[in-house]
Amino acid sequence: MHDQAEALRLKMLMNLEKTARSAAIISGKGGVGKSNFTANFSYSLLAKGKKVLIVDMDIGMGNIHILFGATPTYSLNDYLSGSQTLHEVVTPVEEGLAFIAGGSGLDTVLEWSKPMFDRLIDGFTMLQTEYDVILFDMGAGANKSSIDLILAVDEIILISTPEPTSITDAYSMMKYICMQDADKAFHIVSNRVIKEEEGRDSVARLQLAMRKFLSAETTILGFLPDDVNVRNAVIAQTPFVKLYPNAQISKRMKEITETYLLGEQPGTSIETSGFLNKIKSIFQKGRG
Ligand SMILES: Nc1ncnc2c1ncn2[C@@H]1O[C@H](COP(=O)(O)OP(=O)(O)OP(=O)(O)O)[C@@H](O)[C@H]1O
Ligand SMILES: [Mg+2]
Image (cartoon, rainbow, N blue to C red; front, top):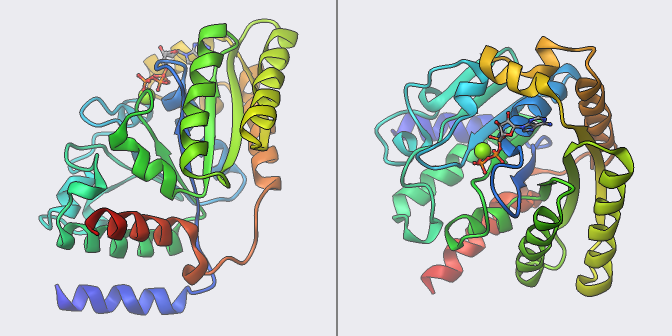
């Protein structure tokens, strides 16, 4: 235990200049394509030379592992409870890409014990030096249990479909987050777009509403078409960007990835890493 902590600190010292970008993938209503986006986006980032870790936050019904055709032995909870090492709960997909499976118990930070919390900080301190991007695939909707984590990450990637109900739900979710953290970086992806203008219009309206009523700036990462290849890729348990690299949807994902990487801020150090500092302050505030 002690040796492991020492090794972590050593590793940290060696990598002080490097820390991952962290993003939560969220939506207003469920089933709009967050998990499929996360799996394919991670793969697309990998193709751009980034090391990517996915944390499946969909407690109980997590399905990132299914999309990769991988069978995890342990979940994050096994690490937090102290029964497994960090290395043990990270399931590799391929060189430079891995995920941590969801498990019960990681939903509310405030209910965690201090040792669990310390393990989380130690664990993510190490993971932030090992990966370039950490993606949290969240469950549906704004609930109190997932908000702590959403508030802690650097960026939000909101997935919405052009349907009016998806847009209004997305807006209320963003409003909820904005009320707690006015400076959050928001990115929008419109998924299952059938008509290009429809996708463009709906997202532009959402962006305008965010600006006008919440004074929040958002970037539009792009649009993904409604495509039967998504379903085929799910059945094949392989990301569509890998299975169908020349499909329109894969090209769009590549553009989204390039737009996302344009917003990269180089040179943030562990000390200034937003994610860990924020999660620490949320934890401390909650404990009074
Ligand atoms: N661009 C697309 N074209 C066609 N089908 C899609 C597309 N994106 C997602 N789907 C389909 O929508 C369904 C839901 O996708 P997914 O599981 O990724 O959503 P989710 O937002 O993660 O859901 P949940 O809120 O339950 O976690 C899946 O059956 C998937 O195949
Ligand atoms: Mg999902």
